[in-house]
Length: 400
Image (cartoon, rainbow, N blue to C red; front, side, top):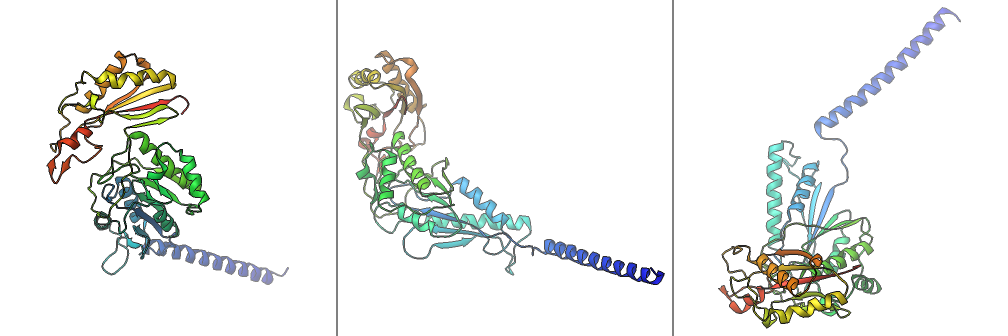
């Protein structure tokens, strides 16, 4: 090949190589500029929907700590306006309120100064908490299922349900369902009625299930567990990606709502097939505790002996005993009086013949779970307090 042709070919190859290098270098430069200026492509906007029943039969709605942490992280990840949306669903009508937690500069650009961004995010979440606390139900009764269905219609959001879940409206009226029903039968009924929301792909977290306040009587442990089983089961049958019951500390906020909610009754004793499931000893006249006392009355054996006799027949695996006290307004646990009441009952059951290995948890809940409010019109009510000075017994059957 002539020398000149060879030189021309080599020259062309070098030109092409230089062009490729320049194009590659320009691409790297553009990418670097994008990173420095925040113009890189951003993922789809994160969003959360809060469902709050906010009735007069449960604590006032408040942001649980776990939700505050999730909102904070979502807001810090947001790289553009609208990238950290929170919606609140409390009614079946009207537009769901939306708040963007993205921290912005005065000119509307995303705030990149860490300290300023953190301050703005904290303020935005506090404002959201105030908005939530002022939310109240606008219709009588307590109904969760329609609100959950409405939240499911908001696309691409995780869902947090802030509710006791103690529904009093069809098709989920726990006054009609009762406490002896199985969670599976309740869920099957919802499916048959075509009332199941479509939660496909959603991550659903429940907060405050079974926690009552205001007009609703406090639920015993087995009833709270039943409420949780029903709602987690409904969530799972609705094809949610995950269904979680959060274990946040329950809010102490009093309900601000005034619309009436029917009371779901809680009997003094629950049985299943003639065997005890749960027993409230406060309402039995032979087992009233005197104020500031953990001493059992002389007639206590009359109330306790029948349960010792039935335990072997019913194949009871363990017995949990929980003590409670009345709230006198001083915030004192009165030398762990609730736990001493539980221990007094446990010791007497042992004396009456209960096998020691059947004793489960013996705990005191102080005044945190009153059956009824201890105060009427701001005044301490001794009649109501007598109902709260109580011991509850939960019986666990073998194989359940």
